[in-house]
Length: 463
Image (cartoon, rainbow, N blue to C red):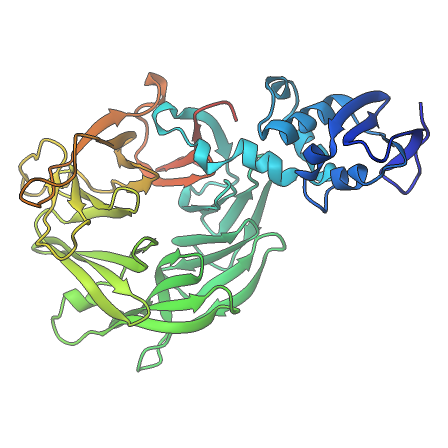
């Protein structure tokens, strides 16, 4: 067996032709052959790149040859081979970090394009410490997960293997937005300021505040983000004003705009409703802001689409009859969806022509509103890809569009669109406590339930 150098990851033994594209590597006494082109796929900073450039001899690497074989297959195809299931995911992570190809492992195991909505089932439960159930969850693109429960935030890596928990200054966290796998923005409706928290070291990096004309403190009602901006809905401590602040994520969170600033005078109910959900609509470069209020005459609310550059509302909808319990915009479907707080039904609105006099179209049975009953109370609706997910009690409905011919009619109008409902999960996954949060990251869906100190992971394969 060739010797290995103490400070180098590999050492040298046999001669190798410098002009050949074939590379021979000795890993733990087992020889592997591949091409320089394959090794180059790992990137210039990886150990594979260093191996590819060592033309004089056959490098020896004192590591597990079986796992090396798996990672070499990953390089060749972009996917893990079936034999990878024989290894613990943490072992694969450690070895991928050693070779400098963890990004390829992440892409193969948690690629958002591999999200299979129709085959999702509950595959894992992540327990949380303490007695508090999750109040908010947030994810990153490749599936890192942050969970707020009580005054704590627990974070899981993309493989859902490593967990860390920090204690915050909040009594309870109401809003949470992942900015990176190690940083999040957090706020509460009873605690002043938006905190930017380093989840790795457990300290507050920065606190962002908004003050109204009376310079009173402000609490956070909602958080959202785009690739460039962080959005925060503030309400003054006296609840007599509210606004949405826009911060530049690429410029040290510099405030760049203040939109939707309302000072409340008298009985102006509309202006008294702060935005409690913020969603960036990337295809239109608009911010959707929604909020509702429960009063003696029932639940009312508003939905506004903001142009953050001009600070103007470009589209607005006021809700009174069967106001939304939750609302979301699907970029892929060019539609907006809501769950009626009274009927519990799912409604959609076509946004392909926002200048038209749009109205909600019920996708269900359009049940009559029974006075005093709120069938949709607490229901959640989220869009992901080409599907829409709606929670009703402890169950999840999946809505997808059925393609039926052309989009435009002879008269130039838009053809009726058809959506189909599917119940999700296996029989044993159905029911249970009321669902409180739905979110998506990588190729997984994350679910929390009332009074449950855990997070459910739904995927289309084994985690």
